[in-house]
Image (cartoon, rainbow, N blue to C red; front, top):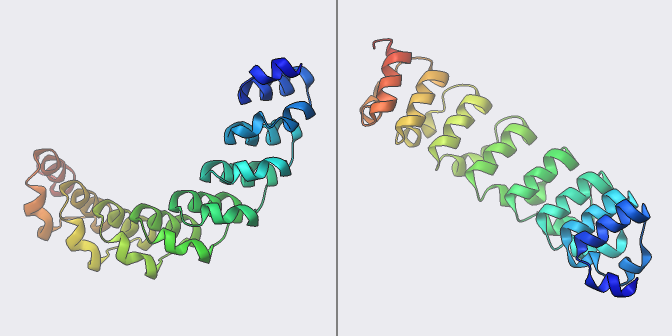
Length: 208
């Protein structure tokens, strides 16, 4: 058995425990075969142990993705020991707040401020309202500025309009769904794109 174990990949060992032994496999745990892979360590805890695997947690904590999933699917709650892995990564910190903490995580807000997309997502889905501290970073990107105005502010955002109108596409969407009418200041930009100029004429000016 040990000779066979030495030849196994982490996936092989996981599948053997799950489908053949149908339970924990102490020899594979002792030999650290499974723990050489973050993914299969997580899946062994989730599917075989059906709970925390303390010996495998050090391996899992080296990956943002598997730290988040381990907290969500195995611990089913906050994992303080894993939070240092997530706190500086805006994507996985956001996912952790959305699915695990289900509330603001102040220590991760600096990471949210590093990326317009995640600042917007944080405001929309976690704060569920305007986030004054994040608006400066959101304003640097026309797409996320438009989305923030449309879905968070639910109205015009004058401070961001100069940035939104640099993109014919975003200017069109802003005129259609935020202003809900013509946006004269942006029309010169929209006219630079035949596609968006056509849609603007059809959907907003109503003149084909």
